[in-house]
Length: 239
Image (cartoon, rainbow, N blue to C red; front, side, top):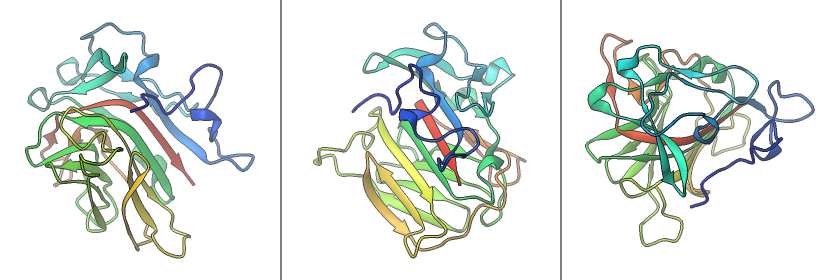
């Protein structure tokens, strides 16, 4: 697995693709998080994962008891952000940056257990097309749900070359996108650039409140569930 999707150096966007406002025919880069640019030591708590997009859409956690942990040398010598469900770790961000819009949500991630679902991204509204949740579902699939407008994609088989992310503690590059103007296959999900499947529903998210990494609610925030995952990088575009 190639560790990073980006070239940090002098680029203002991943591999020079996109910009903060979507001008000059470029896609709008609404959030870009990369663990490798954080100036932290191993096992430091993460209060803010700094957004590199220029839109200040940082992922934050003010409560130290809920802060995830920075882990060095975790993926090809690079760091990751590690979330522990028993400690209720999560980072919040502004999910409404992709509401009423097409989107591409890409991240390098792994899960640390196979017990039911392991959420990478989730919100807190239990209404159709108001809660994007992207998650590993046991040992079988990676799912992209809008709440009632859902897609479940079977993992790439471990016998295949590009199966990184299929097994526990194995990192893969996962992407979920919505292209509402496409003739078909509006929703698509990828693992390491392998198409896991499509769904022919063009409806956009009307809002995405309570957005967070490693946290999810099915009852508008009355209660939450937390998840064992680690993230190395997150890239989000809106159009």
